[in-house]
Image 1: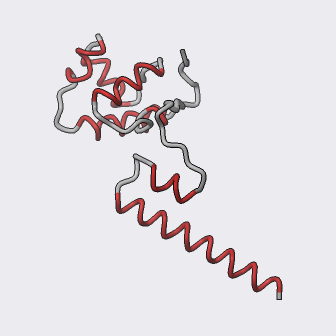
Image 2: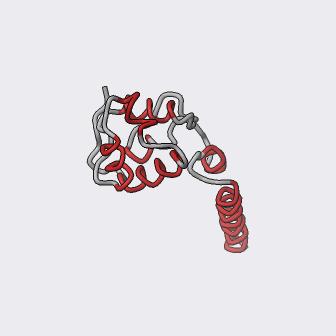
Length: 125
C-alpha cells in the first residue's frame, strides 16, 4: 500500500474535489468511505486529505473521474493513469485541464517549440 506523501498539494486536491462534487452532498462520499461529512469538509479546505492511495482511487471511482484527476495532487499515480511519451500527449491527457486551458497550453507550447527551432536555425547561419 502506498502512503501519504508530505509534499502533497492538499489545497489543490480540495479545490479539485469541490469541483468534482458540485451539486452533490458530502454524504455522497462520506457514507461509502465510512467517514463523516465533516471529514470531507476538511478535505475541501485542505486542512487534511486522505492518507491512503487506495482511498483516493476509490473517491475517483465514486465520482466517476478519470484516473489521476484527484490522486495526482497527493502524489499518487494510479496504474490506470494514461502514460504519455510527449509533452503534447501529456497536455492532451491531463484531466485537470478544461478544453479552453488545454488549447491555450498546447498553443503556447507549440509556439515555444517553433520559436526554439527558428532561433536554432538562425544561430547556425
